[in-house]
Length: 129
Image (tube, rainbow, N blue to C red):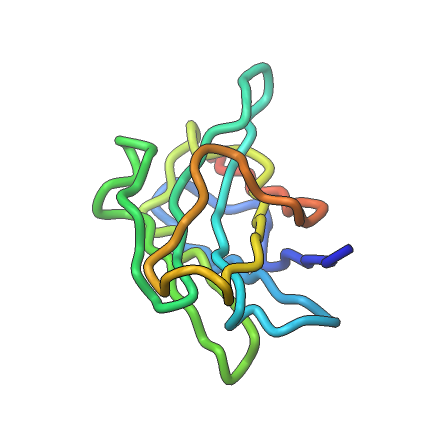
């Protein structure tokens, strides 16, 4: 089973920025569609965005993240990043990356919903003053 590893979380003040990273010690993420999700205390998991193996980015699903969050891919480093800018207390959550093998699909492919077989363990982001 593909193992994904997130890193980069932490405790920050409102307005700060963080860069979360998702990597795999075993597989090339260049062959995968990779998405970011988050789960806040007392709330269900919500999708943020997906980046296809071809670099196409699906629309941000979290309205409040528009203009503040961005997903990027660096195949040379085998990493997919989630850039979090102008963080707010309501962004406090565990952030997860998830992946689905997509080499056999069109380069723009991103799975629907939570249809990702591989997940990381999550990284905590806490925003408070």
